[in-house]
Length: 394
Ligand code: LLP
Image 1 (cartoon, rainbow, N blue to C red):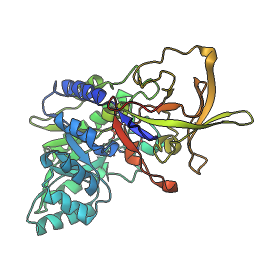
Image 2 (cartoon, rainbow, N blue to C red):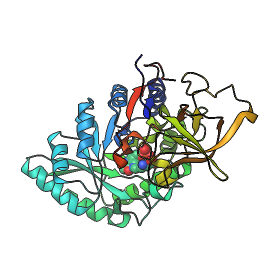
Image 3 (cartoon, helix red, strand yellow):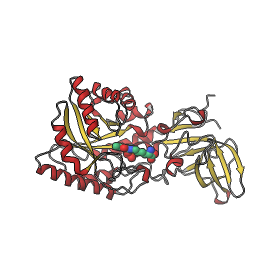
Image 4 (cartoon, protein in one colour):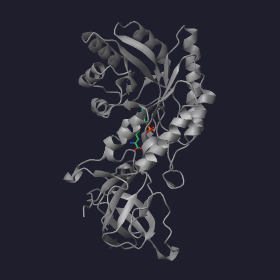
């Protein structure tokens, strides 16, 4: 029998499809609202094919991502390209493919795009990424909209950079781009962004400037604590918040760049218990996955729900396991094998009594899991599978 070698990523493509259906239903309530999937969250070709079939555009931050998007069949007219440090070959790749828009983060970058576009006899569509100075209630490492960030152009420079773009022969100014952070669950943060964009648009209108495109970035969060209860994020409130607060000009297109909200809940990292180690006052479950496969807990202190999937004798993700009596539960620190003391998935996890060989699912790992994997300690990159396609090794 063919078996899978742990650790590996397991994707519930049926959940992904349902997520995309809900997303499309909600976004299609509004005119000229367009979603670009932020491919940095997960570039697995299996998922990209499904996301492309659902008709989404794509948000890239590197030449490699542009190439992966095109390979997966995304039309170049739906590609937007962000990043503070685009290198020349990446800009050329984008120009060569006639992408829709560069999200430009500085004037020196704009000058290079103008020059390279000129050499290729093209005109590059651009949006300026403006730093809206709106703080999002999320982890310090993943908030990006505050004034002191490396990202974006200062709010007060908006008019002057627009004037510069308008004077450049090989630049076509499409609009403005914003992004305030990631894993945002408070709709008020998005409301604040919308209100700030209104102020900017009113000001620009006074200067005789109207814009074809407004890109509000991504950032909608997911429920890491209860993936079974909330497998699909609240897209309805998210888009309704923008619809209520953002004054869309006639004919204007509003772009969204969602990553995590689309793919986080459809992925789990499956890992096997190697050893149970009794510490002085802690019990460790040492597993064969580590921060090399999923760095989020080590890097951001992120919490991912951990479930035992051996006791049920088959994979039953998205269901609460029914067989556990509370007194059978044990408390474990679930840790990886990497030579770093931060290689810990979680402390004090309540799980049924584990033994060597048991399988665990680390949930909500579909976003920023596989794409952030590394080969530290010369470990192989994790493989991935589709849920329901292979019998599980027990
Ligand atoms: N647009 C821009 C300009 C971005 O910088 C990002 C994410 C997105 C869209 C997509 O954001 P999302 O919808 O996925 O929140 N590795 C971190 C998250 C880094 C996010 C970087 N930028 C994590 O694992 O939490």
